[in-house]
Length: 320
Image 1 (tube, rainbow, N blue to C red):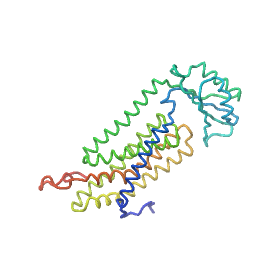
Image 2: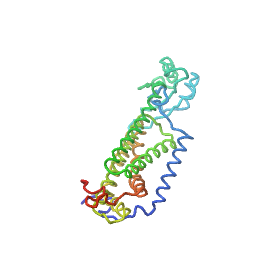
Image 3: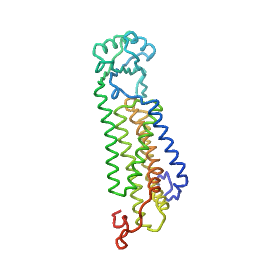
Image 4: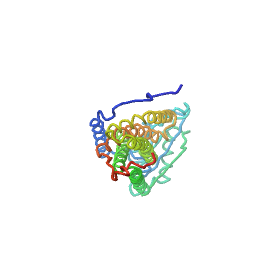
């Protein structure tokens, strides 16, 4: 027996609520941009510059006691969070301190880090510090610019590829879907104030690749069906194409999400932001492939009239 998450043959009308789905996507994108501009992102040390100190203690983490110990050092607002990880035993109580670089300094100096460690040992003399990471503000600024260029360049490359492989209408639909996915991912990070660092940028690039792969599968089947059904209305051909690839889409996304759920539960704090970004991105990416990309193509229309009656239209003679 084969597992079937959807029937072998479906005939669902994915354009029945086209205005509702496109409208909901537009509202979600605007809300994400408003959150981004008003609330902002919880940037990690990678982008802000500063120092991250990871502590490990046999005693239960007391955030208030940690804060009271380092407050006399006058380092401003220090972020202290307990790290929860199901793989930790009762003897491992881990916390993360984030100290933003002080004004006029590239990073927190070694003597200040030593003073912080000595202050925290007043809470627990046996406390250890497994890792200390520092990033200067100049480097962090360059990282922000490089990250933005990486995401932008990937979208331009995809736009060019889809334009060459299909038609310009398809490339616009694909890029609209990718922008939708990236903006909604940034929006959820802003809403939940999940740490946004270089790992999140890597996750965004992964989301872009996953989403465009799903979109191209649908577009490729659409191109095949445009050759096969030359007289059928474009809307019907699109519906047929999505229905024919629906089983593959659900199985691929479903199995990937199962693996990501395991990583979210057991992967630990270090990769949790990265995994959550991909988890969320696959959900919105699958949605955008079905309800955004093809809807944009339908609105723009596809020229199916033959340029040369003997040669056919632009979809004739293409290896499907």
